[in-house]
Image 1 (cartoon, helix red, strand yellow):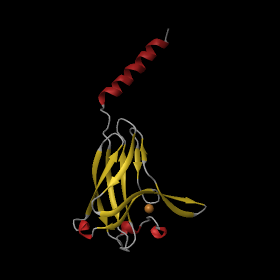
Image 2 (image 1 turned 45 degrees about the vertical axis):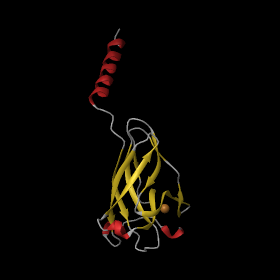
Image 3 (image 1 turned 45 degrees about the horizontal axis):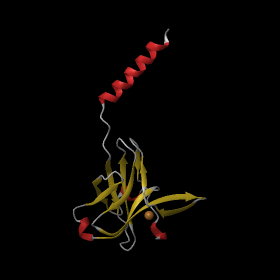
Image 4 (image 1 turned 120 degrees about the vertical axis):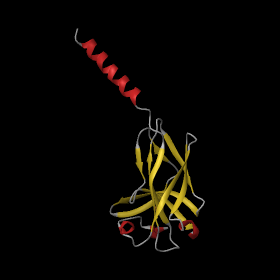
Length: 157
Ligand SMILES: [Cu+2]
């Protein structure tokens, strides 16, 4: 009866895998803020959200340093780029959810200029499990090489 030992071995392996690594904590990192060269137009911030042990939903993003903050998603349909507001972002367990140019982003209106003096903005991410995670987004000044590589077209706002 060759099957039983194989199954036992598989079960032992799974137990070993489960036992040697704690589930990763829900986290937010990799932030950057792409400043719009036009101070009257909105700017966009991007982050990487790393899922934890359970599925959660990003419910809100806040910052003290802008008058208005919204979560947006850019898309291209029939060659035409557009963006729309989204209320929440699903963050499945152990997933990586990227907010990046051309996709989901955090849109900011009327940024407090003094907030930029220290070169970063601080955001609070509020999740459905009650976690409130602080994350910084270093500022990319307009005209820098990184800032010129793509981005959201905010002209529709
Ligand atoms: Cu937007």
